[in-house]
Image (cartoon, rainbow, N blue to C red; front, side, top):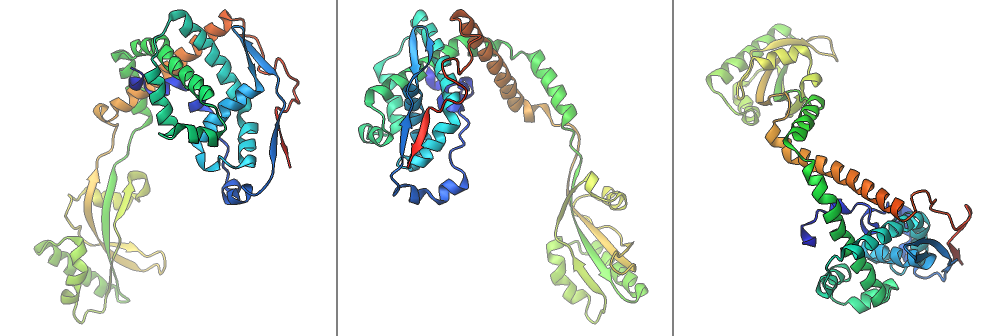
Length: 359
């Protein structure tokens, strides 16, 4: 059953939602230097919160962070400065998650949610690999600590499935989906996209340039060629012709990116057809350049089709409903256990530093 639960359901669990700020580029660049330094992390251990009679200490927070750290950044397991940076950035968030976790576990215990040892063992192997003991040693975590933490995470997932996901699913009604689509369509009107080439003819003698452009149009009308073959054919068609002919790379532009003049020309074409030559002013020389347009393809604009976006909209609505239901569920638990008005630092001063890096 746990494997069927979408991960987005558990956004508040520390394993999934801590805003990892661990590895800026300077940490990555100097990781090899960290291994040779003798820094140590001093832990100012004390009780930070009590939930349902269970105290949560700095060491409890650190152990949880060690698990998160190892599962996400195993390559930095031996780096004391990297681990310290992770502790500093995330300890308050992890404390909040541990408080919420204990509240949900208390609810799960009351509801007697089933959980087998096999479920926990499977999750342990997925988290730490088949060589569990060795990898736990590297992470600085005991087997019992890892077992209890993962067991708690599984119970939380199952509890949230019962308490949150089932309610969120009922909010995903056809009417809600229709309204979401109307809103999305209004905000995501697409303009047409034109894929085209230009063949430009330049000549110091503008009359000669116009003749060359007309000649090319007749040849391309009588002998339609894919634009990528035109350049080779020009060697045969323009023997002893002094006009300069250039074929552009393919342009891919939306309506607002094309001049009104060029858009009118393209609108008269069907894919695979060349336009008659048109005289346009060169920005560089202010002389006439004669251009033939070739329309490769055109994608119609308008609103996205419902079938193209319905799955995306369903997921978005479900995310919103799950988030709202989870917040409401946790608020009820905090009220039930008298933690709804308790500040996160209720047992420590504002300048409290749970971790200090000692050189």
